[in-house]
Image 1 (cartoon, helix red, strand yellow):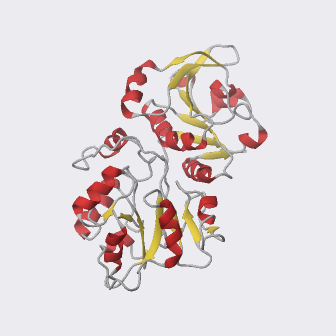
Image 2 (cartoon, helix red, strand yellow; image 1 turned 45 degrees about the horizontal axis):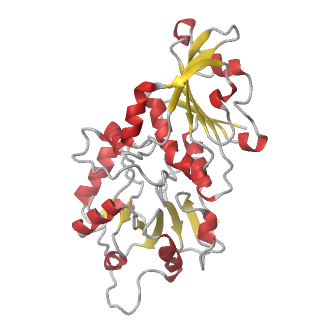
Image 3 (cartoon, rainbow, N blue to C red; image 1 turned 135 degrees about the vertical axis):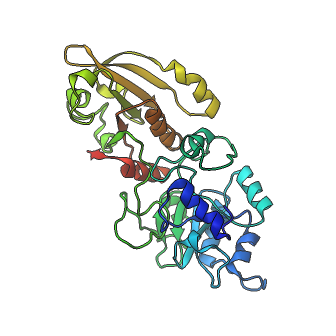
Length: 366
């Protein structure tokens, strides 16, 4: 939406069901557009704070959002900032997005095109699934290259801080002049309180599928080949905790594998085969994985439900690209519970992956 028009920006909150105190990120096509909306065009003093220069030179266009002072009077609609004295802005790398902003001639407020609290969309089909009937048009620019949202940083304070992990990692940020001492200022759970969040993704529930998500985040350190604890706990007790004999065989457990788990995550299962009904759809929307389905077995080797298995691979960037798609796919296939193999979050984009998973999880297990 046009970031300068209140009626347009209000439409975003309405379509998404987004809380009105959750600020939006504005997007520009070049630095001249940004400077114009900062209100300084004398050509002598650059209105963009000097601390951001090294980040802009290295990461723009790309998945990095910076916080800037909102000049008064502001050209931005008040709904963009949610009453804050700062606003977030970035320059996207998508040629389609850049062209759209240039044609519009104004900054565009553009959050993830999903229903509020749901996993972020990474394909046009995801947008259609969430917002059909709420928006008039979808521009299909293909699958998202990164998969997780932009990193949000605040260089207006000292030391500078990372407000949201994303496509640019902390180590990458610290390698830039003026950002060597950047610190983390986010939590891996939704923040509470009445104050407006400084950046999107900080305060409210996010990234959550319909299914219950159980995250095993320490499996990397332990070298586990599968789910910790009893197989029967998962097979017979983990789905809602009170399934009757009549509905046990209709239950579905989803498994998202990454760097350690083997096929089926160590559960009793048999008859694994590719979920053929989804192969064509995966090819059409660019989904970076295949779904395999098998029978979940009880202690007597009798079917007690279905297991759906997705392997996102060992590559951290590939995991980031496929994470939201995998959560959405299991929702679409009717999974009751999703078990996720967490990854070590010391590397750059891995921190963003684990941040999203911790926010999505109903339960976190060591």
